[in-house]
Length: 288
Image (cartoon, rainbow, N blue to C red; front, side, top):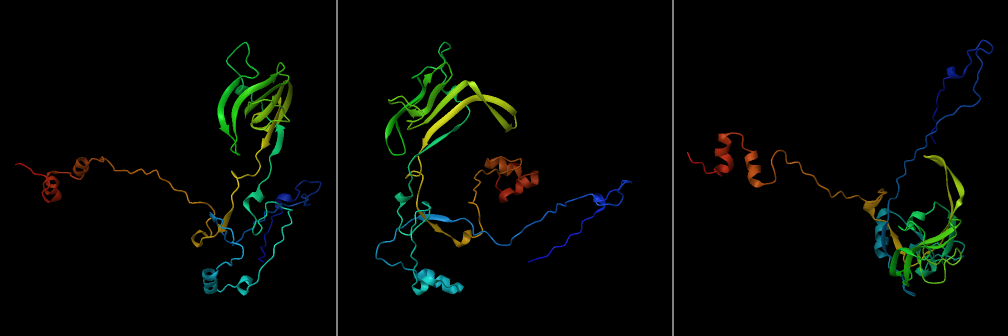
């Protein structure tokens, strides 16, 4: 532990008024305390494919034992000690021995919230019927979801009660039944009531009102498209490196006043007649 002493000048905190001359007026003092550490970050890891242990097969740690031996490190496993980790299920994401990838998957979860309206994404060019229920502003046939199931995706108005409310979906499943906040399977479902507003505060634009808009969708959870199992491997040359290397592949070469054409580059090195005669030990044939 290091003890650092600091002196504080009390001159700014002593009264100079006639009624209480020389009295301390401050009740508290704020002192900046700086914490430092000299421990290096272990750095980033290298992801390698996870190779599951074959039942009944013993891992070969010979190379690891030799390397650790040279460094003077010893661990309990070198003596044949094993650890029995009991899976409690309290934390589903905890890594347990022999745990398969699909056991990290979770089911979809309904997500709801308040947001800004997306009416501009479902409005048509028809000035007499700007919001047309059942009309797809954007449509994609044979869209495939994360489970590999094909469906027709569309961005459309579902119902419109003179905008109080208007319900619509973005990139949702257009197949029947009519989508509501309770049965939206794909895409995002919105319900906007323009007659009701919500106050937005704490922004750089100040305080303002927006239409009351509710949002619903089912998250995909953790599945085979966003979860993978890999070994956490530390490579020695990456110890202390906390971010991936960045490669700058844009090269700019300043060639001065000469261009990339060879003849021009040669002439750029010639300043006078003597240089022209001597260039390249008679490279130019000069007729006198």
